[in-house]
Image 1 (tube, rainbow, N blue to C red):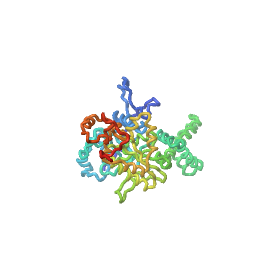
Image 2 (image 1 turned 180 degrees about the horizontal axis):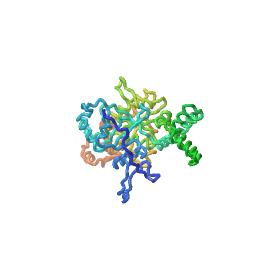
Image 3 (image 1 turned 90 degrees about the horizontal axis):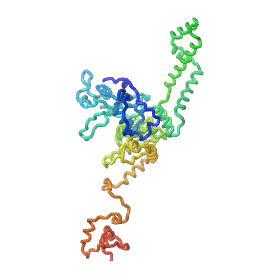
Length: 474
């Protein structure tokens, strides 16, 4: 089995915008009269994690993702190193030398041109970076059975996982303000300070031993010798000792610091949104919603229906009593796709409820397909509109009723004209039918046909008559 590298490449730098109001929801359209200066041409912008300009533009402008989220979770990879990220399963057939067989190499050779690697944290391994992830290729291959390009590539022969993003502090504070939770930074530092305060007051033997070991004997002895020879001021020596002790305490604070997802676990009043696709989840997080990305609409649950169907193991740590999940899938127009989304939503919701949590379903009004497209197209009003949509999420029973209430047949066709009148002739005028109706023999009582009577010349409508289907009631 080939080993993956421990890091994703050196971060060259971040595209820093000095404008404080540069990142506002929906305000991503570049100015048409914007010109690139000569200095930018000589020194091109270096995007974080070696991302290319089109990749960064797709994330930042096309999906409204916060730059801090991009810096922590999206990486550019290319060349044969892509295989180290994909071929992580022992079930992949290999040659005697350990190399993957040629069919797999040819299947994924389009990834040599590069793509965006999306990293995730592992909820089953103390929130460390997960080995599993997905690649969004710059030049996707075509799935000839479906006739569509494969937008994302997952490691073959490996069970799909759920994507938990690495959340920066700015997003964490945004989420805390949305759900009226006290300042997160103060809370986390208070908890760490409380533990360290108790530890420092006891001054037990273990702490003293660790502190003495942390001080380099060679450094302390050399500095003491300089103090005795009046070369070094003793005050400088004790300042050095104090700074060394503070650094030692800071290192312990980092070890016991709570992660974002552990903090979310401690607050079950915060709802968690499940959506299909990493870019959509990152867009929701950028607006202050807690979102988890599913690789597909069916990947929120595992097992077979009516046999051993249950919640995905990666979602179990978050499925606490009192927690509310909100399923927020794409807006679909095809009746076949809508039926598949309905089935996946209901079965995922039942798996969530069986795990002890609540579940609701939020629906996009359209015509945008994904929530990231909705945010970008709606501009500055996207945050308020999206908040209203999520607040109006339906319960599972209401969602099932609303889907079943829709009629089949002509309902899948979009109407050209929508009217709400007793007779169609009050709203429509069809000249061709008028000419045909004028040629009807006189024996045929045209006054009884209420559909076209008001719009036919020479035959005023009879308000006292009723629609009898062309048959005289007398």
